[in-house]
Length: 108
Image (tube, rainbow, N blue to C red; front, top):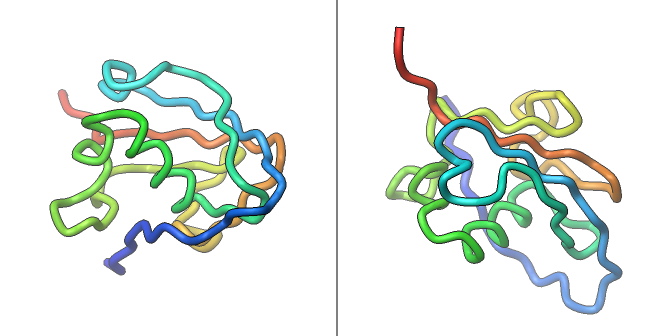
């Protein structure tokens, strides 16, 4: 499996876009189940996650390994499509996109 890390980038001075963020399962204990997030235009999924991790304590531990790699069982979808097929954390965001975060599921 390829390692994917969130790396913040400098996006000052750019227009902002609004992205709808939806979270599921135990992530709802950390942040609202659905809300709008404003990010600079030209942002990526990684940029969005960096913003969210800074805003919601505990989210980083739920999504990333201790080395900063997205946990193997976390699924991130942009407009219903897994980002694994569209550039991972470098997947670009557009105004009005929906990003869904699915943590590992347990049970049987």
